[in-house]
Length: 316
Ligand SMILES: C[S@@+](CC[C@H](N)C(=O)[O-])C[C@H]1O[C@@H](n2cnc3c(N)ncnc32)[C@H](O)[C@@H]1O
Image (cartoon, rainbow, N blue to C red; front, side, top):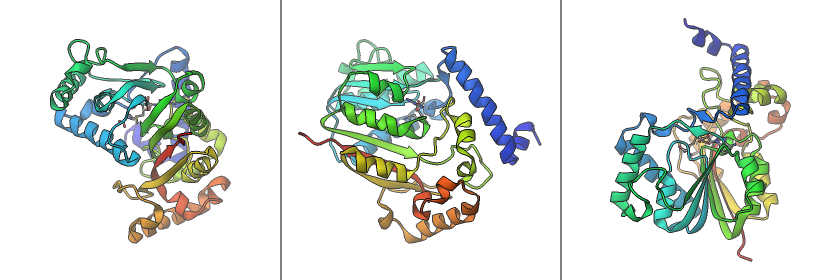
């Protein structure tokens, strides 16, 4: 058995590894090193799979928001290794897209150029490039690299008609404060759409899927904050935030604990009963080991492993 397998078999050793890894990540950030493999989504996809992914993400945003396109000024948080979704927003009618990222995801510039060229051809977007298609030539795109969402929205002085993210909010070290700042930056009638993956992102692969919720707060923070690993802000906290935000919106469930497949986002009550029963059984199997704050939560809330948050500001 190799060292990695030995560490992964033990929760204590896994925690020790992530403590070290987070310390290393904080040092890298302090030295201004922004490169990360997180968000390198397209690295292992061929061009067709990349294009499918981009269309799925863009199509999901439109469907979740119940809109035909985005207009005005758009913020995309955590775009990862591609601005292709930003390009689709610009092609649909957005005037400007601000891409905000705490890191810079590793990318293959040549592969990205192929994606932009194919999208430009397919959707008639050639006019959006200042020269040959590439990430430096997209008109109307500003990349704010090295800027955590937690500080960007507090200090940017900008107003947005739409704020979008997918698989990002779970990586924020303070997502609820960031949501407050985003709400303040929304223009009247503006919308925010966040698809959030509440799983542990493989930290405790091979153990119970909710093992992350058995760690004390201080330990969890020191294992995750610098490297942007999952923050343990669950559906109850997003629900409370939405209630106090003054925005109108909804939360739907996109994943369930212990079930690998994604589901079409829907309210808990509308989900398949056998799937929700399996997810609740998964929660009950670990409940005695959860820390007090998670023990206090309802089974149904702990059983939600992914969600979509949509919130709109009134027009007045
Ligand atoms: C898992 S990737 C998702 C990439 C892309 N949205 C997708 O769906 O393929 C997470 C992205 O969020 C970024 N990120 C993590 N923490 C962040 C923070 N606090 N503020 C802004 N971006 C962050 C990462 O650098 C990365 O680009």
